Image (cartoon, rainbow, N blue to C red; front, side, top):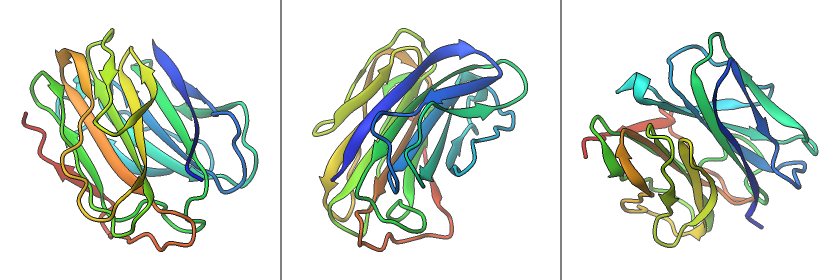
Length: 219
């Protein structure tokens, strides 16, 4: 099994993000949340979530992307509530995957990230899973609200939060480099991107002490 379902949270300026739990959530599913936020403030995630990437190092106030994951221990429902102090603009996408590795970090190898420092409509990102048949998970953000996104070739758009971001994925990718992957926005502005591959159950995801890899975003 692979992708199960997704949800989105529309953009707003508030002191938290109550991200809807996607439908069908069950034990051992992997939830991955991409959080768009226009600030560098400290984020407190819900119980069980682990930080995977924090892209708020360039053009900070032009929007940041923070990615978390959780391995479910039951049938989650309701919302995943991320909190902070202040009321920055924020939005979020969440995806659920079933049949993924049941212990440890579910991402196979080092994830890919990118941050643009100028206005763009596309932003390339890549990763290199060691194993086959994992599921690629990608988030792209744009500071310009009102844009929509076209998914990368062979990827499926799972959620398009036209305020700020999208979630795209591809089932059963091969091992080795993914090459350059990019969703395309309809409006030019600062972008951030994340790409990781969730290992299948029974596989040993290759770990790297540095779980986040920064790829230059000068496009």
